[in-house]
Figure 1 (spheres, rainbow, N blue to C red):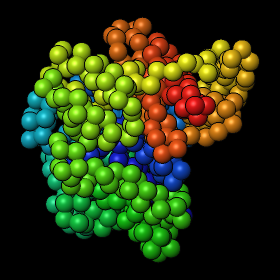
Figure 2: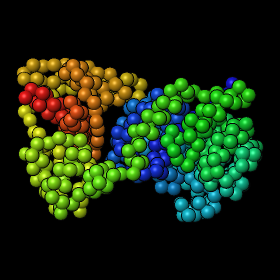
Figure 3: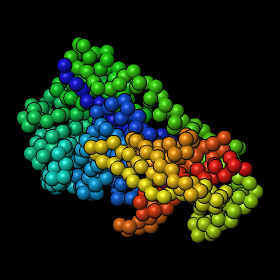
Figure 4: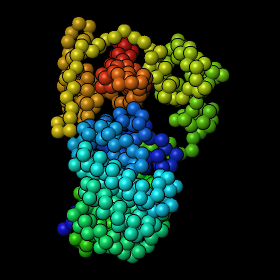
Length: 469
C-alpha cells in the first residue's frame, strides 16, 4: 500500500487568506495544529529578508516535528538566509520555486528559458550543499512547452533535487487531461523514477481533488492542499478522498483523521472575527484589528480603543497611556493597535516587582525537546521551576507557571525588533488574562527568549499586585 503525502501550504499561502493577516501567534498555532494532525510537510513562504519573517520561521522550526519546507525563488531567493531560518527543524527541507511557462518566466521573473534553466540549476545545487532534502517546484507546468519542462525537471534532479512538484497553476485541466500530463512527464524524464513526485493543483473549477486522484493513479505520491480556505483543495477533501478510495487504489495517508474536522474547525473559529463584518458603531472607527489613530484623536477615542483591546484601566492609567500615545503620534502618521498594545504595556499599571528574574537556562535544538530552568526572586526567596514545551518560549512560560502554581490564559504574544544589526534588540509583548481582565507586559533584550520571559514577568507582577490589594 502506498502512503500518499499530504503537504500543507496554508502558511505558505497565508497572504491569500481572505480578509486575514495572520499574526505571529496565529501562524504558530496553525503550525502546531498541523503538526498534531501529522501532515507530512508544512510549507513556509519565501522570506524577503525581514527579521520578523526569520524569527517566525525559527520559532516554527523549534516547534514542529514533521517536515518543515521553506520556499526559495529560483531567480532571486536568498538560500542561506532561508536555510538559517529553518535549519534547527527536526526535518528541514528547501524548495526551489520557478515558473516554467514562457509567459510566467518573462512576466514574473523577467527571464528567458535558458536563463531560467541556469538559475534553477544554480539554486538547487546551492540548496543541496546545505540541505539533504531539496524540492523543485515547477509552477505553471501545465502551460509550459513540453520539451523545456522535461529539460528543466531533469536538470533540477541532476543538480540535487529529490522531490519534484508539478503545478496546474491555472486549474483548467480536466482529471483525465492532468493524469495524461503527469504520465507524459514521467515517460519523458526517466530520472523521475528515483524521486518523489508531488502535484499542486488550483481548485479553480472545483476539480482539484479529482485531478489529484488522476495524478496518483499515474504515479504521483503527494498532494498539496490547505487547512484553511484558499485556491487549493482542502486537507479535509484530500483526507475524504483517500479514506473513500484508499482500498480500491491501495493508498493511505498518515493524517490523524479523527482529529481533523475538530482541529480545522478550531483554526477557522480562531480567525472568524477577522472574516466577519466589523461593527462600526461598536468602536466608532472600524475594525479593531486594523484601527489606526493619529495625533488628532483625543483621550476619549484612545481610551475606547484601549478598552476594545481588553484593558480595564483607571483614569490615571488612561492619562498615562494618552500622554505616551501623543509622544508617539507626533512622530508617526498613525498609531496602530500593535503600537497601542506596547504603549499600554510600558505606560499603564506600573507596579512594584513581586517577582524578579534571577537566572534562566534554556535548552533547545532539532534533536531534543525544549526545556527551561528558571529561578525567580520573590522578595528575597529563590524559587526554581522547570518546564518542558513545544519550543523554548513555551517551555519558559510553563516553568514560570510551575513556580507560581497557577496558569493564566495567554491572550496574546507578539515579538518585534526595535533596533537593527546583528546585535538587534528584540521586544516581546505578553498579554495575560486573569479575573476577566487583560494585563500586558513588555520585555526588551538582545535575546528574544529573555525578552519574552521579562514580558511575562512584567504582566504577572501586575496581576499579583492587584490580587494583593
